[in-house]
Amino acid sequence: MLFWRDLAGHERIKESLFKARQLGRISHAYLFSGPPGVGKKTAGLAWARALLCKKGDTDACGFCYDCQLFERGAHPDLKIIRSQGASIKIAQLRELQDSAALTSFGGGRQVYLIEQAEKMTNAAANCFLKILEEPPAGVVFILVADDGMAMLSTVMSRCQHYRFNPLPEDDVLQVLGRTCGGNNDQARVAARMSMGCPGRALLMLNGSDQREEMLQLLMSLTGQRRYLPVDGLGLDGREDLDGFINCTRLFFRDALVWKISGSTELLINIDYQEAIAELAGAYEEQDLVDILLTLEKSARRLAGNANQRLLIDSLVLQITGSEREV
Ligand SMILES: [Zn+2]
Image (cartoon, rainbow, N blue to C red; front, side, top):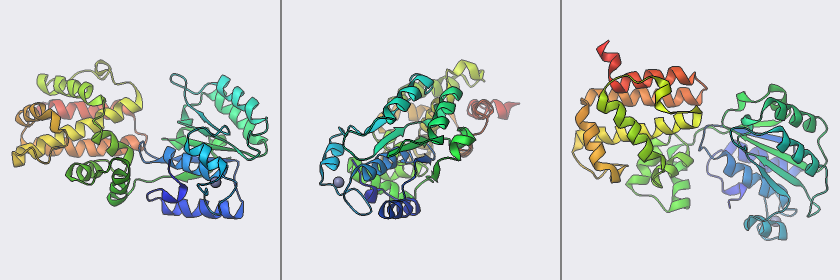
């Protein structure tokens, strides 16, 4: 697991929290927000590690008992809260409230990392708000959220909020190099297509399972070249949509590369050559460029919390060509 000092990019946030740890000015609650795959959870864990080590100066020391426990993923004072089903429920927050009231196992801090914190139900968020109003001593909450603005504003205002912006391509490559030793053409293309989010690039390189499913959906759109109602697509919620847009971008990107160069060398989905050739054959070069531009725009608008239904609607119109025929 990473140290805070080893995080790629996000220099301003790193500096600010180095200083906070050095001066002992630790907040009760942090909110790390930013697009999916940008590295918020990795940062949250690295910050938790820095908070649980009782030695070190600006960061965890890496040698003490706390650091060793953390490295093994076995530190009893780090607790991770995730959604159960579609949401984080009030029962989970009540349980958290009870356990936060106890003293820590190791005599230091207790750290609670709450993933996708925007998924708290209203009741859960209100319960959390009560905890934050009288925060138990020695307890630090790290909230991680794709969409910080979707949180209750009263919760947000009680957290120290850090926004994680997309990383420059070189930083994404640094993460890829460290995680999967990738610094070849494929890694470079994945870094470029990830829009500054290493998590996305890793999914691409590891051949996310979503691809087969998304390719089927895409082929049903391009094959029939007719508009399907949004509800018929089986895309449910922001994550599905994000997955669809990302996979589709890569397939259309490959189709364009294939059409222009006729070469398989620079394909990302190298294992889907047949489908890519089919896709390339179904569109004119300019159509592929237009669709790619729309997909880029859609990805940005999705990150900016656009209306998902309208967004997928216009995307499908463009892919099926219905827009051009009208
Ligand atoms: Zn340590």
